[in-house]
Length: 171
Image (cartoon, rainbow, N blue to C red):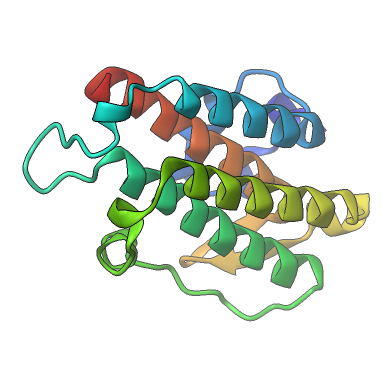
């Protein structure tokens, strides 16, 4: 499925910028392509930038990478539950609490990228294992309706959003 074919009623409006930023991409292909793009992008950041904060109270690049990893895990959990026809409303999460309770600033970039790769590869297997019917299933997460396939596109859009933030505010 292409991102431009995703009906707007399958995700909350606050995800629209993530979806629109993708252009016309295939879900399965872009899950893989964006993995490699992100790793390549991060590996080209100068070493002295990884602990940089552009303002007081803002996350550094390592913390943002950990945030992307944590968020992708949460999105994958939501996709799994909804794909299995679990109708339980899934809660939101406070991204600041998550980042404040990591040791990302003390980790190496290679370690963070290896973890990101492992998480994304796991999610690729998950999404590839789903039928068209499962991908179209809609559940509730963060008090809004969302389809499994929309979650996949949101994962990619979230990653790309932070990559753009790196370019605009950190580099």
